[in-house]
Each structure stands twice: as C-alpha cells, then as structure tokens.
Picture 1: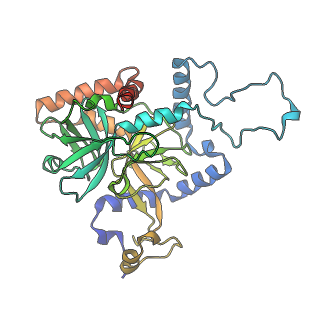
Picture 2: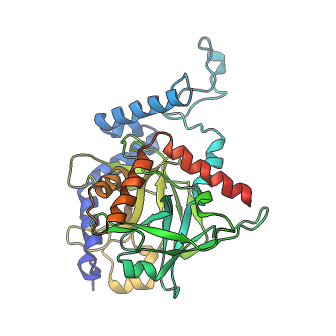
Picture 3: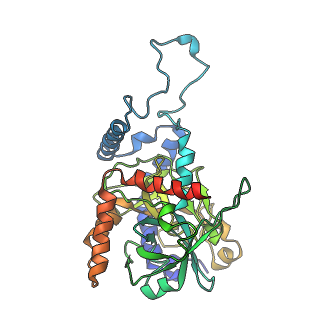
Length: 371
C-alpha cells in the first residue's frame, strides 16, 4: 500500500508539503545557483534591497568604513602577476571574522533540551529573554502539556577541557504561556530551580528581530539543536536558505537545507551573525500530486518500505517559521490574563530596543566565564 500524507493524519504536514510542491521550481533554481556561486541573483529585488540596506546600516553602527563583503586587503591597482595565487571563489566573499566561532558558542548557551518528565518526548527550545523560552506548538501545545516537561540547559559533550554541567528548569505556564497551532510556535515561562549554580539570565537570550533583510536566498544558515533528544549539536555544513517570499499565502515560512532529526523541533535557525531568522518546525518529504511520499529515486514508497527503512524517504527541504512573522503574531495575540499581556508587552519592547541582539549574546559570556 502506497504511503500517502493523507494517511499520516497530520494536517500541518499536508499543508507544508503542498507549499513545497508549489515552489519546487524555485528551490531547484536556488540549489543550482548555490552550486554555481550565483545565489544572490535568485532573490527578489525587494528582498535584496532590504538585505543590502540592513547590511549597510549594521556596518555603520559597528564602525566599518568598507562594505561588509569587500576584500580584506585592497590593492592600489590591479596586479596581474597575482593571478593564480589567491582569489575569492564565486560571487560573494565567504571570509568570516574568527569571532564567528566565539559568538556561536555564546549563541548556543541559551539553547536547551525540552524533555517530558517520563522521557517519552523531546524537543528543542531557546531563551528569548525575561525567563521565557520559545519552541514549537507541537512540542508544548497546552499549559497542561507544558507542565509535564522540563527545560535543560548545558546538555553538551565536551571532551576538551571540563565537562559542561547542565541546568534543569521547570516550566511555568501560569506565569506565561502563548501558543498558536497555525504558526506552530509556543512561548512559555521557565523557572530557575537552582539560581545558586548559574543564574538563568547568565545563559543569554535571543532577541527576535522584526526587521526584514537578515538573510537572503542562498546564504548559509546554522541550526543549534538537540537531535533525537541527545546532547546539543550544530549544523554548519551544507545548509542554505533555499526560498523565502513576501506577499503570498506562505509568507510566514522559509525553507532551507541542513540536517535535523526528531527532537530538533523548536530549534533556532541562525544567519552568520547569529541572529535568529526562523524557528525550525518540520522536515517536509517529497510527494507527488497524489500526496504519495517519494523515495530518493522519485518513486512512491509503500508503508512497509518506509517502516523497514525510513532513510529511503526523500525530503524536499526543512521548513521554519520566520522571525518577523512570529513577532507580528505575538504582538497581535489576545490574552485572558492581564499579567500575560504585560509580560508580552515587556518582551516585545526589549526585543525592539537598540542593541538587543548583542546584549542577549553578551549575557551568555557570564555563563561561560562561570564554568
């Protein structure tokens, strides 16, 4: 019997698969451009203008007098004798400052594992400020469900230096809880059960930036996650933003390559400045027009084949919820409890304040120094 999406009883997955089928041509175009080094040409003029404007603004605020993508060393005049010695390969400069790795470690401090008290289910979440954590709605769908989970920070393997101790936090939906099924996002309050160890606010947090232009099609992305509920991992290889669009029925989402596994739901998806550009929520299998799930050769899979060897399933891309859309949805949310609305307002204000992204990362320095 052919395995079809309709038989999996997941409306969320069916809608995601349809979105990707409608955009399969765009994804193929971007993948080809990435291989050719011409990915910037695939994005819309509107989005490229937003990206370039934001890049120029950030360069000025950080005291850079040259464009972000300019070569490090400028020669006074072209020297043809240098041909064959060094070169920028492709259409953009992929050189990164060495602090990219340091900032990545700080960005990872606030990412944690969500675990059911009985160890039955896992997910990933990350701190977003003021004792609040963000993940997917399908990870924590109700206040009652949230109470049956805990949030663990610092679950990491460290074979160089000292092993990182972890910190267990309970989840308190009475203090704050907001979740939306359509957007597949949840924000909950976490409780620092052991502030004497390392205070929760020393783990840093991530501001969600409403402004667009944080990334363009073809750019690398980085995903910090807890795949299969295991220790923290990061994907930095073979990951690119494949598609994003405005003004359509799918404007809330973006699509990207990069490995994820069960338990990675709720992971932050970062650009190379370690700004959150999306929250990961699912990997979407390739399907045909009848909704049949395809193998890696383009053939429909049977249920027996998929059960026997799940690695046969071909995936079109990962899908994430865009940061700018999350901010808008949270801003428009209605709350029955007044203190939940007050916390939401305070959170949005802190995200929009100047320097919020850097303040959140810098807070994690204290956690690293404490270890």
